[in-house]
Amino acid sequence: MANERTGLFCPSCSGVVAWKAINFTESFPCPVCGEQIHVPKSYGRTIAVVDLVLTLTVCYLAGARDETLVIATAVAYFPMLFVWAFLTRRLLPPALEIEDPLSARHLP
Ligand SMILES: [Zn+2]
Image (cartoon, rainbow, N blue to C red):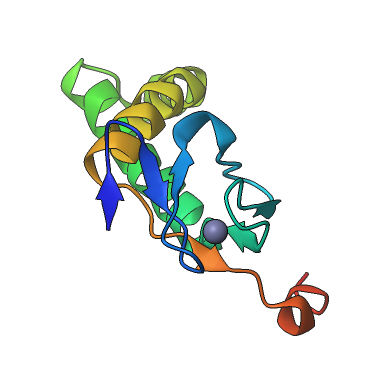
């Protein structure tokens, strides 16, 4: 449920939330209806885990082994995450969710 050119759809009012209005780490108000909405936490975690596997694979294929593989992965992780997160948001965009004020206060 997304329009990769303009943004994502609000789950409350179905209005378009522009990419630059979307906060990937915290809940934010829908610019159309004002409802508190958020990107599912599992989305960010999945991107981070897949990025780690991708970075390890790329470093391994580039010839890094043992300690060098660990160091190369640590150094390449964040630059790779930046590129990977940008691509993933466009290719596999998250579905926005309505913030539940009751459960949100009890989450760690
Ligand atoms: Zn809305």
